Image (tube, rainbow, N blue to C red; front, side, top):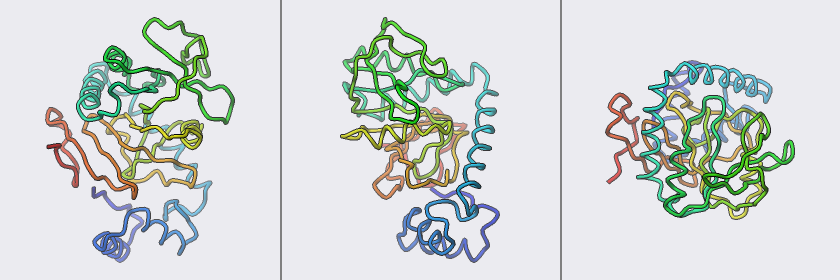
Length: 265
């Protein structure tokens, strides 16, 4: 998928980058090559230090939360329904699986009804629980009617610790980029969790198209998602972080699919 080049790129840089992509270089390989030349590693070539990238991420979080809060109730409901339908039709990994989902927080998409439909069809559900600061999350069993308690940041969690080992995770997105990296709230809990889980579950990020970024400027510890679903459609990624398949929702006429996406057969 093509994206608009940052204003800081020169014409020569844009030409060289496009030639590399024609020759088959992946976005990450390009980033590593330029990073070695400029000492930026996997980070953006426009921002040289970790501190600059962290400051940029903080600014993006503020902006994206403000834009998400600005949606009307009807807009949010329409986008949520569209994303739930796309998950049902195009993410078969969730059907009958052990699925970790989330309780909505700070304006996140409310997919609890979709999770309940998965449960009705035979899936086991669990919610993430912070059991220790700066440590991996645990996933505790949840079903309709489960007694809840107040967890970190006031987010409801199951009152009883019944551990689950999810085979698939529905992960909320504040922002995301073209390689499937997620921008969250900065706590790093999902990255720690995915690094610790064995076998690693299938991960699908769910969020709004307004959160799309060219890059979050990933660090070595950032772990990308297997797929991303927005109201615009579904994108999956291969091991080289290239979008290899996508399903565009034809009902989302106001959100045309970006270059490189194709409707599912």
